[in-house]
Length: 147
Picture 1 (cartoon, rainbow, N blue to C red):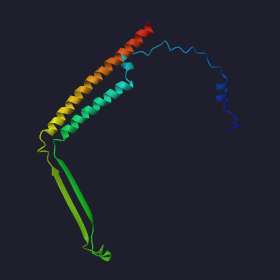
Picture 2 (cartoon, helix red, strand yellow):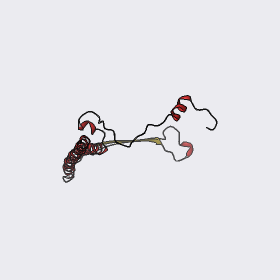
Picture 3 (tube, rainbow, N blue to C red):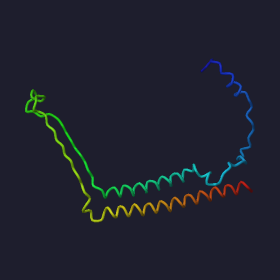
Picture 4 (cartoon, rainbow, N blue to C red):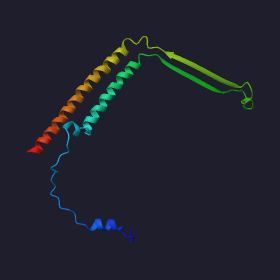
């Protein structure tokens, strides 16, 4: 913006001296327990979302035991000549309901459900490990601040 004047507040801020800093980390810590400090850690959030995903896979495995219902419909016109395409009686339609029952899958559905439960237990253990490591990190950081 080549010759346009600056607003007075911006000019004032640009001419004020910058306070010197020594690059030290602030000595005050936010109040609260270590668990309050962990709320926004990305590793904890990622572990939580993986656990939620494992829980959702259990729901999907359970849903596979239920029948599947699908309804398909089409409508249109048909004629031997182009001139008769929109004449009365040239319309056609089709409706196709379908029900699929999971009867003979050789135990595959039960195995999928069992696998989903085991995967959830694995994700619970991973989640607990991530939280324990995060608490250790925060406790070590707080102990280092106190010394």
